[in-house]
Length: 63
Length: 181
Picture 1 (cartoon, rainbow over the protein chains, first blue to last red):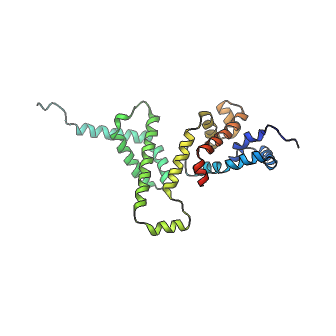
Picture 2 (cartoon, rainbow over the protein chains, first blue to last red; picture 1 turned 90 degrees about the vertical axis):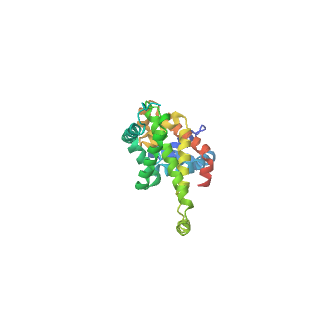
Picture 3 (spheres, each protein chain N blue to C red; picture 1 turned 120 degrees about the horizontal axis):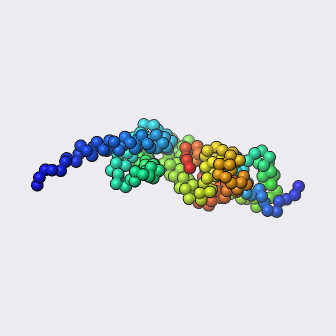
């Protein structure tokens, strides 16, 4: 398995966290996160923001 | 002094009701829906709506009738302020028993919720328009990434990277809220 030196997956984290990726691509990101500590850290730092956004939509928030 | 001036009250009253009826027809449904979602109480939302329209009438000078969207957001802003005042007023009422019961089972303070909603909304408003557009299409309108790309006329990869930068932007703006959550 080659390791993408440019962390293309990092650019997918937003769509990944918002549940917008198809299954193949989501799996690609999940695999990358298991072996890349810096992207894992970025992912973790964005989790609560994506949850806040879901909460906002549940509350009827608009954009 | 000759009494040539027409009495002001009747024409004002009549144009006020026209004005309010017109406002209600154009903006009523969406403002009321938004306020109802905010306070989760239809009757209270209707009261807030009524007060909003009264305040709109009092501030008629500040409206440009050609700019309906400006008026709608003004109405929403006034309605939200009234809703928040209402929550604050409720909090000073002696409802210790109810409050402590709510605290015991971890029910969040509704005015805290409302403030948080407003902070998130403000943060979304500060995103760049390209970031807001991808979030709007993909997340709020429920489109797929591919559909958003077609609608916005940008590559699929750009939609994805903008979603990431939008989320990072929100994280940086809302760090206080997110840490408290």
